[in-house]
Amino acid sequence: MRGRKLTKAQRMKREEERAQASSSVTSHRGEVSVTYETSDGEIVSHTSEREEIFQPRIFLAPRKRGGVVKKDQTSKKQTQIVERTEHHPLINTPCECGRPRALRTVTCFNCVQYPAACRECFAQHHVNQPFHWAEVWHDGGYFVRHNLTSLGYPLRLGHHGGQCENGRDSIKFEVFAETGVHAIRVHFCGCNVETLNNRVAQLLDAQLFPCTGEEPKSAITFGALRLFQIVHLEGKTPALDFCSSIRRLSNDWFTEDIPDMYENFGRCARLWGHLTTTQRMGQQHGIDTKMPQRPPGNTVLYCPSCPEPGFNMDPHENMKELPPHLRHLCQQKTTADGNFHCTKSKKTSDPNDRSLFKGTAFFPTHEQLEEALKDAPQTSEKSKCNYLNAVNNQDKKKFKNMEITGIVNIQCCHVFVKSSVDLQLGERFANVDLALALAISQKLREGHSGEVLFKIESDRIDQVMTYDVACQYKVHVVERFRKKFPKLAPIVEKMRWGIPIVHIQGHGEECTYKHGTAYMEAVGHFHGETAEHYWPELNQIGTQVTQMSGGHRHDVVIMHHNDWNHKKFCKACPSSYHLLLSQNSRVSLQLHC
Image 1 (cartoon, one colour):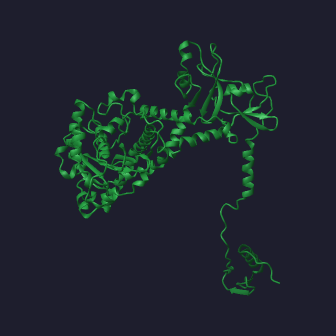
Image 2 (cartoon, rainbow, N blue to C red; image 1 turned 45 degrees about the vertical axis):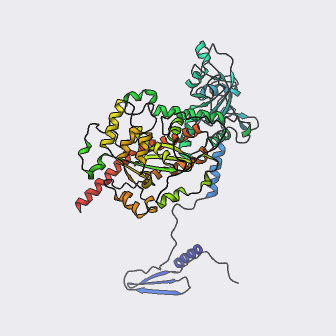
Image 3 (cartoon, rainbow, N blue to C red; image 1 turned 135 degrees about the vertical axis):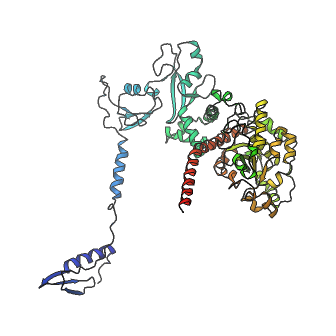
């Protein structure tokens, strides 16, 4: 009967043991004799006159570094460490305060390495952390979650956590915090009539954003609003999912018992986004007086690399003297492109909702849009280009029940968003005209100073514009601007038009040589496709904004536009620095060669 089959490791180990046990070395009169048995059982003898010993060659499998990981032991240790958080070694021991019968029965898992304490000590330690959960030890051998109010300590405002001598009875209050939704009681300060009647100011001083302007009974912490803003901008997390997650942090088993503050949170988050944007853009600090070349109330983050008269270039510098092949030294490259993901469905609820930015950001006001589209044709213009005909003949069924079918963006070559306009019935030229007019006029004030900057912009900056249907768009663009935007017509008249390098492949040969960026003078490696870079990022919120009201949708898209520009702004200097270093190393390498 055959024995059981050995594994490879067992065979290698047996071969090594057999070779070591069977081999023998003898020496006689300067001769060295070695006898050993191979793995096949054959006896081999070797004799050498020199003092060289022939060692049997044994092939061993390489050993793994670090040894064998004992998964069971590691998993058991990790489980034990996690289970430690379900108990505290100091539970039911005398509290360090020394009060009679004061036992350590409360701990905090939101704090780092918080020692168990009695109820009074816990409340004193969390005067300025009122939204940490109190884990109270139960006689059954487990912790029960409570808030400070359930322990008998309401939230006191106006005295940095201290008790107000003139305070009235506490009121029921709901607070949406990073740690969960807290149903607590609040004591408002009553030291004077002004502060007593102004509960909103007391809440804001405590970094609580009230959900209503009069007699608020619920609030959102500043920390929760900041957290949602970053999570939404970076991860595209909807407000509904964020609120559901916070409710589950409060109680993951009986979540339905936790108050649902989604509607209140949505309104507060929208107001918070508008307030933080205006603050970041300097509007709350009087920046318009320091930068008169910008439109009043501007909340758009501009590209720092594009030429801007009176800001990053000398307004009196004469760029007309430059030869044509050096026009790139003072050149504004702009791209236009439409997108059909950020749509808006037809809704009867809140039809008069308008953006909180009121035309100071990327989108025009409702009145500006209506004026621009008042005499616009309902169908696209006829074209001889096959590419444009294919675009116009796309399936219109996908826009069924859609009030807004997409947006068109104007961006610079550094992929900074400059303006946006909603689209209806496809990508009409009237919508693109308004977007282009907004992008140009954002750097021009009305009045004398605006006229001066307007002349510098039109005379001394080479304007290059790319659009995937530029071959047809540019035909009557000057006429349309003279009719709708006469002050901006001279700038549009001097623009050089091109078609992005990828889109040009769908055009005819005539368009390739007339409008291909590869055949344009003094544009370098500008391919014109930079408008496409932002769409994959913005498309992620398409399913969210399609069900929003008109104003709320604009506010959300504006927040994402500015966040995109903000990240580009932060990386502009490091990117330029690394490009400069790589260029210097390339030049030095060429010199040495």
